[in-house]
Length: 265
Ligand code: DGL
Image 1 (cartoon, rainbow, N blue to C red):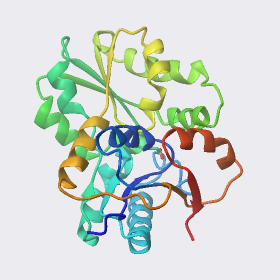
Image 2: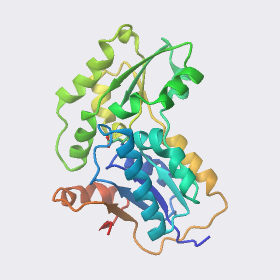
Image 3: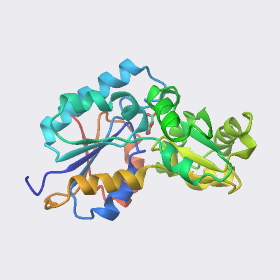
């Protein structure tokens, strides 16, 4: 294994940075490529076929070009739809992002769990199976909060979050039967932990927010255990489309240690 081979984290946009933050804590020396398919953002309102084709195609190209030691699909929408397909076609280890329903079921006191994800994620059989396997004796209320994705993208570009968007997500859960009893909310989209402060305020701090980022980082650390890391170049933020708003994102990317930016050719 080349010590400079990167760990490649992939998302439709900035959401996977919430995973990168945890990866940095466990593997501070790992060379990282953070890849965002901003040309395809948002995934959450696309069809399964569109998402699967984009994710498989892009990860195939990126792994040929950058030879990562491991790929993390730091996106619930892409993982719940395309993880198995990507694993079938690529030889490199691939870690996915799974809604943290198991953890939520273990920690809820009221037995009523909320789940915020994109429209594409919350309709997946993958989520039904997690619910059946780990939360069969609980109530799981789902809400598609796709517009939080745009709010997180804007926040990292320096635009304040519109409280009305957060309120619609909170009301989307609270207004369902038994919704008033929710004490635990699964953030089943990697963009949403970037809005943790706003969401906690929206829920008046009456819920615990749970996401899978720490568990994913632990999995990546386990799979790369014993490997050596040598960062020969500054870590790269890779985008699939050049657009004007990328300049406004640079300060946030630098906070995550991404000091170079490139457009995938
Ligand atoms: N960050 C992605 C996820 O975890 C979704 C964002 C999008 O809709 O593109 O589901």
